[in-house]
Structure formats: structure tokens, C-alpha cells
Length: 459
Ligand SMILES: Nc1nc2c(ncn2[C@@H]2O[C@H](COP(=O)(O)OP(=O)(O)OP(=O)(O)O)[C@@H](O)[C@H]2O)c(=O)[nH]1
Ligand SMILES: [Mg+2]
Image (cartoon, rainbow, N blue to C red):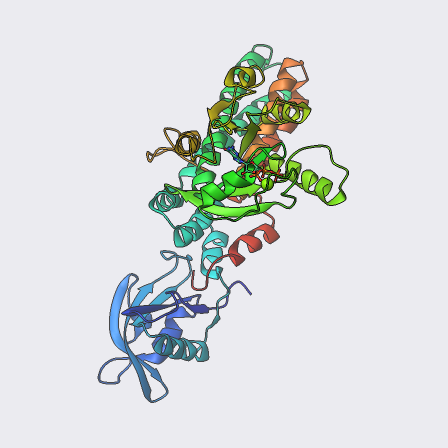
């Protein structure tokens, strides 16, 4: 039932000066006309009003006057959903809004599902999926940055970029197909170099977009920070220091922490999810070993690893193992216990890693501010600016776009290996398809459904 007339309260729950009931569908205006009258009690003839007009009147439930309202009319296709839309601005109390809504529902509309208005806008082709998601993001944005970002996406910035890329890929494909059909008139022998250059350019652009989008994700969703290191390096002490209270048990016994301890802190607008994990060592204890296994899983998923080394001890094979892990990750190495006599110094550590190394003492609260500065530097400064850069703002978009980039990589490799053109077109069209799913052009219905269900009522 995608064509029936739907209605919902479009403003938040709670009392306010104004509240809006939104109605969409072929019967929207008729429904409003049935229930709204002028001050003298005569009909308003809303069906005869031109689009984008406001009328003043009173909502009636039978003979009973419910509220004084303004009625805005948007006729198809110039409306939010591309259907006929009526917005009734009432007084904002929840009771009166509920009452007006029930009158609307008695007179030809049914209650809208969450996100159904925006879903209709999508299904009727007014907005693409990135724009629909932007609506949801605007509603839920908690800071200025994420709001600006969503509004830019709502204006179609991502869509334009994707459409442009798709257009380029399609024309490459068309050229190859034409040459295969009609080899006498089209010669591709020189073209492979040109195609290679174009594809490399696209891959570079795609990589930039992916990496800046990840930075944006950090801003919006927070950074997963895993604290790792050998037993007794001071991991739990650091967690307690950063959270400002005794969250984790600290003892001088090795293997104190076994489960993963999670805490959320805020660092100048950045949200950090800190994970204190079991110390890495060989152990005979089953619970401890399970904890160590879990620790490795968290390292894998972390956006940032804080690798703590006990500077009062020699490096051992556990430390060397962690140096290997952080090769693939963002990481900061913390040479802890600088208040004690150093056995392992910064130069020794430098031989094993090119990651940033800070000498700290959690016990003396020394170097903690430098650590915070370094985290800020890694995730915040310089990289993400407020200008008009385009970002993919959620995991779904990022995932589809990354797939498109991977298909382009296959095209590039294919050219380098001298694959025939018809093989290349398969990967080109794969990239084309993945780009389409970023903006919802090849979207399966269930995907669209899932996205719109996350919306709030009345949107
Ligand atoms: N001297 C000194 N001792 C510290 C420092 N940081 C932590 N410690 C001590 O080191 C011991 C171990 O600290 P924890 O924070 O429990 O270490 P951990 O890495 O969580 O240890 P596990 O949970 O067993 O892996 C405790 O006795 C701490 O008080 C420091 O900067 N200097
Ligand atoms: Mg611990």
C-alpha cells in the first residue's frame, strides 16, 4: 500500500508553541477539507486552493471544535513526498496534537510508519538514498559539524559526485562494447593507456574520499581506542587516569585484568571509547587466555592502539609481537613508568617501530596531556575541515563505495596484466553497480526498508 494517504505528528513529543500534523497522499487535501472550517463554521474549500498556500481555520471533530490552526497545502509534485501534502500547524500540546491526528485518521488517512514520508520521497524519485539518509542525519545530528555535513549531503553533493563517476564508467564501457562489436571503426590499441590513466585517477580520488570519510566517522561516532601491552605495563592505571576514577582494578600482580573494560570519555568534542584489555603473555590460566584472545579481537577492531611498555623492564617477545600488530594500525607507543630507573629507553623502542613514542608516568601523572594532544592531532587537526569537502557519512555508503573502489583496482590490474576488454568491462560494470547502491539506484527493496525504518515518525 504505497499510494494510500498517510498522516503523523511531525514535531517532537512534548509541549511546545506549535506542533505540526503532516498528511501525504492523493486524499491529503480532501481529508483536511473535511475537518477544517472557517471561524464562522463554513467550509474552506481547500481543494480549490493553489499549491503553496496557507489558510487559517479551525479543526472540528464533528461539531466539536478542537483547535485553531494554519493549513499549508503543497500539491503534487511540488512537495516533500511528491504527493499532495498538507501540513496542519496546531498548538503544540501533545494532547491537542493527538486529538487532531485522530480526527485526521478518522477522515481518510492512516497512521504513517516511521520514515514513511521520506521513503515516499525516495520511491517517488525526489531524493536519492544519500539524501534520504541525510534527512535522518540532520534530525539526529548532535553537533554543528555533523549538521553541516548532512545538509551538504541533502543538497545532493554525494549524489552529484557518484553520478559523475558512473557517467565516466558507463561511457568507457560503451566505448569498449562498441569496439568489440565494430572493430573496423573503433580501435582500442591506444586506448588502454588512456583508460589506465583514467582509472588510476578515479582510484586516487576514491581513496581520498574514503579516508576523509573515515575521519568524519570518527567525529560523528567516536574513536575506538584499545589499550594493550604486557601484563603490569600500567594499562588499567592509564584507563583510570583518563576516565578520572578508579574504574579498573589495579594491582602489582601480573594478569589482573582479564575481561575487556570499556569506558567512554570526551576529548574536546572527540568521543573516545577506551578499551582496557588483558595483558599479553603466555598463560596457563583458561580465563586469562580467553581474555588475551579477546584483547587481540579488540586490537583488530580498534581505530587507535595505545601500546604500553613498562620502561623498567626489558622488552620481551610479547612486546615484539605487539610491534608487529601496530604496523598495520594507527598507534601511539607509551613508554610508561618514567619515574623508575629506565631499562628500556626510547632509542631501543625506536628500533622496533616508526609510530609515535611518548615517555609517560601514569603514577606521577606525567605526559598524559601530551598523550591527549597526540590523539587530537591524529584524528582532528588539519584533516577534517569545515569547507565544502564531500564525505560519505555512514557505514553503508562507505561500504558500497569501498567495493566500487576495489572493483576499479581490479580494472587497473586487469589492464596491467593485459586482460581482454570484455573481461575489463565486467569489473567496470561492477564498480558502476556498487556506485549505484551508494545512491540507491540498484537498491533492493529490503535495503530501502531497513533504512527508512530507522526514521522517526512524521519524517
Ligand atoms: N612506578 C610506577 N608504577 C606504575 C605506573 N603505572 C602503573 N604502575 C603500577 O604498575 C602495576 C600494574 O599496573 P596496572 O595498571 O594494573 O597494569 P596492567 O597493565 O593493567 O596489568 P594487567 O591488567 O595485569 O595486564 C601497579 O602496581 C601500578 O600501580 C607508573 O607510571 N609508575
Ligand atoms: Mg589491567
